[in-house]
Figure 1 (cartoon, helix red, strand yellow):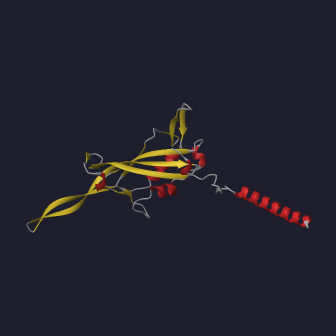
Figure 2 (cartoon, rainbow, N blue to C red):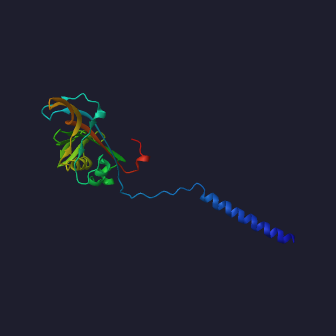
Figure 3 (cartoon, rainbow, N blue to C red):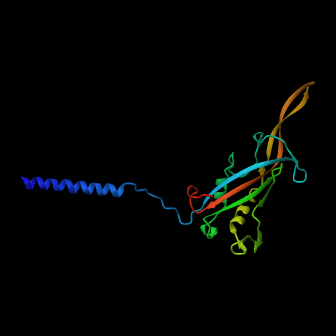
Length: 210
């Protein structure tokens, strides 16, 4: 009888120890999805803060609260309002991990000027020069110019946008109708200047501090 009790006790202790060992191994385990080796993440932000009356040759500052101005947006196929710059850049700008070189991320800042007739002008805010048709920037560490295809690809993608819906505000004008003064609302188109910031990263933005 004693041998039988000892045998049962041995089985119970062995089973409990196995269960504890199994729980210990599984406790706190986090599954991490593998990211494709060449995956590049893109985040965009655009800010239009300067609005003026007139075209590129005649510019007059306008004193209208920003919340009363409708920002310009690209007129492209499958256009959305508000325009999804993130989706557009992801689709049009094909960046590989090798384009980043030895960097984890890269930030491109492009000045966008949209005239009151919807024509757009783009300027990379990073001082660049063109070498063999490819933009290059001065690398202080290398003490020389370094080719950078990312800037070229960003500008090329934006230049595909041939027409914009210009910025506008709504003003009130007085008109006479049958000898009665009536007030009508009318769109006043404006020239707008803003900055589009595009951030490329080889790691998810949740893990990136910039």
